[in-house]
Image 1 (cartoon, rainbow, N blue to C red):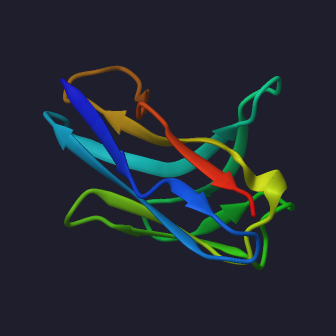
Image 2 (image 1 turned 180 degrees about the horizontal axis):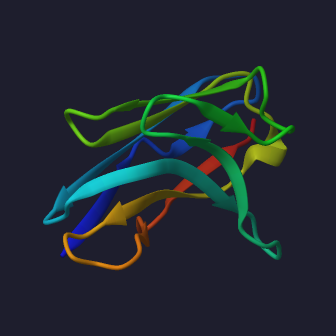
Image 3 (image 1 turned 180 degrees about the vertical axis):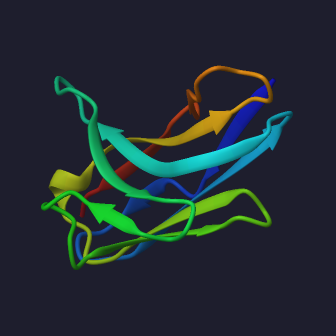
Length: 121
């Protein structure tokens, strides 16, 4: 069993910062890409940022220059530092990890339960 535990969501004023964290636990062989996705009401889930095992990040155009993704491979964690938040960043944020199990043919996507981020004055 693999679990992704998210923390750090909440209510923040426009322009403020917020930091999300996600920790992977359970039994697995290795973790590949980790990342964050978000889903606003009435919209599809979209990529926010991902990071490879060796630390190469990728960002959605809407968050470039404001959000920073990082990971700690020793702790199996990924964080998302969000600065200069805007009301349009309001969404449920989901942690994602691509995990390889020993003897499995292909890696598998795992998701956290989601954490609400609300940007409002």
